[in-house]
Length: 255
Length: 266
Image 1 (cartoon, each protein chain N blue to C red):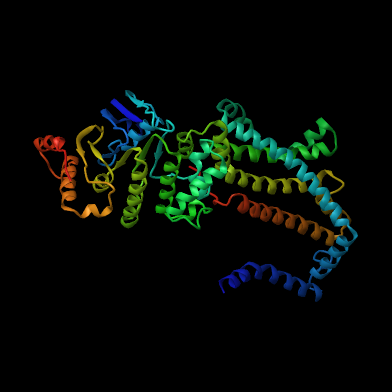
Image 2: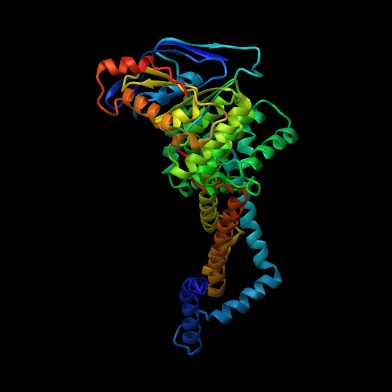
């Protein structure tokens, strides 16, 4: 009963909006150019899916996003863990990292195009940079907040450097790293679509922009909806992975 | 292994400045002895064990580790009251951690751990994580890990202090049983006089901060012991004396001196 109630509470609002929208649109109370009926969106979405158009755009966005965030997260995590482990590295890099954190990465795009030309590299660098910074900050925090009690416990049992890393530091910082991953992927998606909006010929962002310019509002809606779905998929996917990889629960092991 | 401490002084930094936790503390453990320290809260018991474990260096005096040929290794292992298990390891991994660090092959160490865990009632919970266990179960695993590593000296820092009365009795009995099979040197720290008498061969009473030894009692109840011994009159008599030395009831200097000389026969 409680589950039913929860399911209802989580779905009644979007379903209600959709029904109202559909009813208003089919009675021509809404302008079909601005607010195409959900049934229309559904059928044109299905068309785009069947023709493979949507898949091509989503593929372009995903590959851009995954290449960028892959490079950025790997580098950022390495950098963050290094900062956490070595004091001098931290003191040298932290000011730059936190300064970059508050810089809007999209604002770097023109500068990057100036440096490396109008191409894929200029689009991927901001995405990579965003992920780099998020992971660097979370990696640093993860290492720093490992509870000293566990380090001392392992040392008492004669853990060497390797064992200390593998059995204490790594698992203890994993939950925080995962939080970083989730945050980074969310931001990477937002940034990818933004970059595509301003400077790309493919991808969801570019599709949305094209739809706006050609006034094909159904594609506009479908583009935005697809981006939202991707966000949810990434978020839930990582959450699922987290419960598999961190079965001991999220906050344990931290100071 | 024996531990010999001479004129130990330990202090640590706190918000109020440097706090002197121990001063001029001297004692020596005997071979394969269960030695208990009792003292009021905040008398530096935990500091003492951290020094004995080698986690912090004393500012005065020294700790000598006198090895004996009978020990398999020279480990001095600490069982603490809190954070005694790694939250990211299962019961099995935690229990076998000491053996893992000693590079015992996985199959062998898990076999040994499984045997002891089964005895302690973990038959179906070997693969649980610590957050799924009660406090009593956690401390069981911590004690099991210590015994499985078979160290030269075991240090125990009020491992049962946070447990309810019944669980504590149960774990005390289990510790007695385990210890009586191995007779390792143990230094056990507690504020519970009854616990100290029940478990130990000898009790050293610490004063308030800065802690130093004010009295010594030898406990000679026959072994193997059972928790039922706490009901006997002899037990109560000794308990009164130790509590007296602790300053739990008002005692004059002469009585403390008398207590110091008591060698009690049970």
